[in-house]
Image (cartoon, rainbow, N blue to C red; front, side):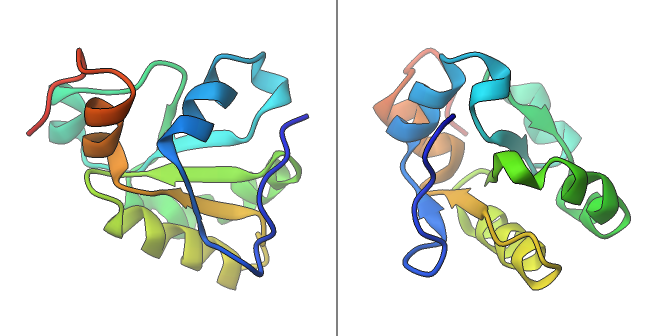
Length: 118
């Protein structure tokens, strides 16, 4: 099982860590959620992530709590919405929630240049 950072020390994880986790079996890593809008997802996405737009987080809190034992990492375009999403999850008792720093833009620059930037 993946070791997430101590939530009391940080709310962010690096794209490099997420890339490593996504290369492992799904049950061995945190749930990785893309919280961008559908139009953004049409431009680019990261294989192995699930999609849940930020606006649907409140109605999905129970189902997210059910998988929170794995930890949850949220990503967006640049890392601001995902940080809000992680803080929202933490405020609802999902303490192992994190944001991928720099968002999909950082992923494109640091991990996979084939992922289009916008």
